[in-house]
Image (cartoon, rainbow, N blue to C red; front, side, top):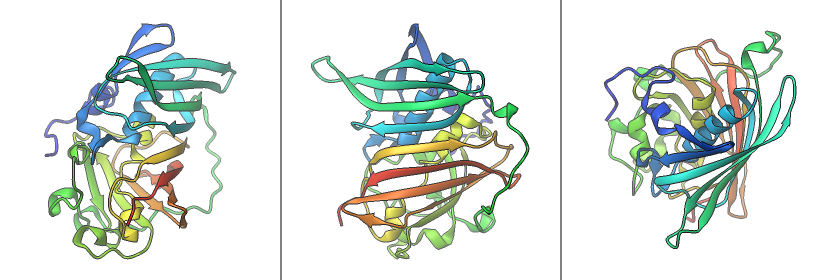
Length: 281
C-alpha cells in the first residue's frame, strides 16, 4: 500500500533503494530491491536510475542529459556491482559508460545492463524553448484509476505498484477489465508513493514505470526491454508528472514505446524511446 510518510529528494525510499556505495575508483556496490519488481523481474527504469546515480557520482557533471541502455539479461533482487568509466570529460558535457553485474550460482559475474550516457548541468541550460509538442490530455487525477481501484490483472509480482502513485487515464486502461482498445497508448499521472518530488534520476524511472502499451493492444505478459534511450530536457517542477506512451508499430515480435513526461509547469521534461520484445498472444 502507499507510503504514509513524506519523502524528499535525497531522503526517500527511492533514494535508499537506488543508493550505491563506492568500493574502488569507478566501482560501486549496490543492492537491487525486491520492491521494484514487476511480474518476475526488476523494473528497467529502476535499474536505469541506479546506474544513473552511479554515473552522476563518477562523472565530472551530475545531471543526466541522454542515457542509452541495453538490457542484456534479466536482473533479480539482490547484490550487484556497477563499474563506470569516463569516456570523455568536456566543459559542458561528460560522457561515460557503466555496466551492472550480478552473480551466477557458480559465483561468476553476469552482465545485466550496459549504459552509455552524457551528463551536464541542467541548471545551465537556456530558457529558449521552441516546440510543437503539447502536454497529453489526461482527465483530472480523481477521475483516473490506480492499481488500488480493481483486482490485479497481471499475474506474478507487482511490488513496484506499491512504490508508485499511478493514476491511469480511463481511455487507456480497458485492458485491466478485459476490454483493451486495440490502440497502443498509455497515459497516466505519475509520482512516487511517499510524495517525493521528481528529479532527473526519478525521470529515468518514470519513462519505464507505466503498464506496457502492449496490454492495450490486447497482449498480456512480460514485455522485456531490449534497448532504452532517455533524454532529460530540464529539471522538473514539484508535483505530479503526466506521462504518455505510444506504440505505432508491433512487428516481428518487437515493438517500440515512445514516452513523453510533462511537469506541472507544462514543460516537456523527459522523452524516451525503447525497443521491447512483445509478449506472445
